[in-house]
Image (cartoon, rainbow, N blue to C red; front, side):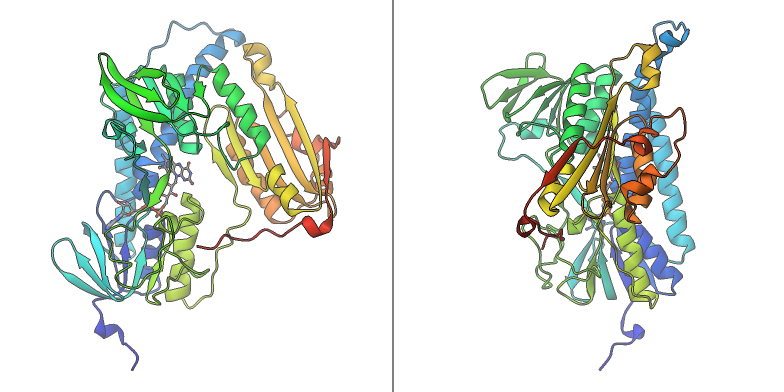
Length: 473
Ligand code: FAD
């Protein structure tokens, strides 16, 4: 017997009003579904409240330090500028509150209702609310995101903070120790160095930003070192204690680093604990993530999941795409799938990294013939400012078809460039298409269409090459 809508309180219950959940709730409601969405913290989720948005505002704040310094070379004279952390935190809070309000308005305008509190799965088609009510839902969408990993094996780990807390520190840290050099770790290291902290980054491996192109990693590490960041490679924090003056972090090699704040940026874990998913029969992966198919459907047909909780590509625009595709497919009568290949992204350090497609190292593993075009130059602005600065650009090309497989940039506005380059790379542009494009002069980006000299050619027997594919859950 098929179930009618009348058997349920709602057609869709969304757990989590972050990037993915909000979009799904709104679009499903616009398709005529009766939708309820639960949020236990603040509507808008990680990106708006304690992720991309406040981070980018702080990146802007940090870059004034460079601008003041550079201005002198262009004839300006400034009195010594000073910085007020509390003023920045208050301004940031005002902006994210405004954005969160807009999210609430948009959800409600679409006809969905919001429950302010925690929700839990209580069966394949049932939700338990924190106030004791049970909601019968025809379809459930898990969009609960992820949380910072806790290093509970490290004595004193409770003295560390995570990215959740760093945006609202009551006092600006003079000395900051960052654990981890993924994009979140290096972004905060870059921001706090420019705002005036003495920053040390402790990295388990030998370089920053695992998974990014090696030239970008090396170039950024050098730039950050020049800016004053101290890296402790091949090292970990073994113990944290309260010291006579702040905190004391003992490294694995025995040295002790004194600091005011320790930011644990060692990774993120999907929010599935205590959510009732396993009990309802939903298959979870090794990291606790919800295993889903290409329609974001879990092993229980009435339960779907999108965004960071699925541990596919943990980025806001991806969560939004997945939420939208889910709503269009399940409630809009369309068949929409998200293509997770060739997603452009940025690291908002100073200098920035903008990247799309395969790194040189990935391309070599996947293609028999790979050509690399690269340029490293001093940006025009640095000539008068006197700043030691390098822009690095790199195009990775399939040597057989001439198709551009990846483009990587380290330099000013690299994130903005990556967005536009993403279109060309997604469309399958060849190196010849890049070359046929007339340059915009004088820009840094003109280098992308004027690189003629091949720097490296990697060749390997065809049988060793394999095609890219999405990892299994
Ligand atoms: P979220 O946005 O995390 O939303 C999940 C929501 O569910 C949360 O609001 C949470 O409170 C709620 N919730 C969880 N459990 C329950 C429950 N049981 N009941 C009710 N509510 C619940 N991405 C980018 O693309 N660009 C960036 O520059 C960028 N910078 C980042 C910087 C930082 C510091 C961090 C931490 C992340 C950053 N990200 C960035 C990643 C981005 O924030 C996430 O990929 C995105 O927010 C994922 O969206 P989501 O909908 O999956 O989850």
